[in-house]
Amino acid sequence: MQLKQYLEQNGYTAYEPSNLSVIGDNFDPGQSKQMIATITTYLWLGGMLMAFAGQGVFNFFGIKDPSQLPAWYNYLQQNKTACLAGLFFLNNWGNSQLSTGAFEIYLDGEIIYSKLASGRVPPPEVLVSLLLENGVKQGTQFTSMAL
Image 1: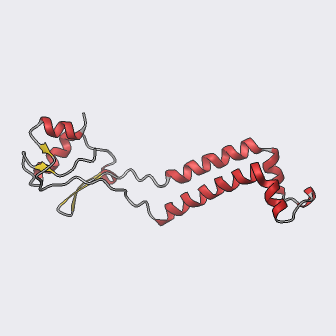
Image 2: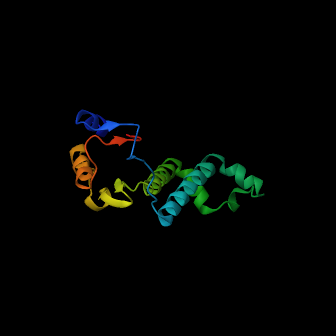
Image 3: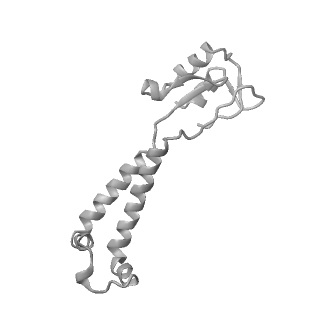
């Protein structure tokens, strides 16, 4: 059951007029994790470029003699599938760093629930009891439900 349905079935009304709002937002994973995701994405894209158009890139820079090509490029061409699969999984891992799993509830600027601290998303019953414990009354109307 979705939170919105639970609230409506238990006497809580959604939408206007309002004195409580529910807002969804992204939780900042931090600069280091954003940098990891960016670097792995560039590695993936660079690997794709070199795997499929590498000879053209080297020709553009005036390297036409196959004996002048770097060893890593020759390895990439001989093991294209394995290299691209490795870069694909590296890119997926890097981008997974952006997912924090955060689910936090603030009331009047104070945190009343944190999935990061508890390790789980609360069922609707727990959310309602947290709101009631913190002074929200049954019948309170909500401005928005981003569910």
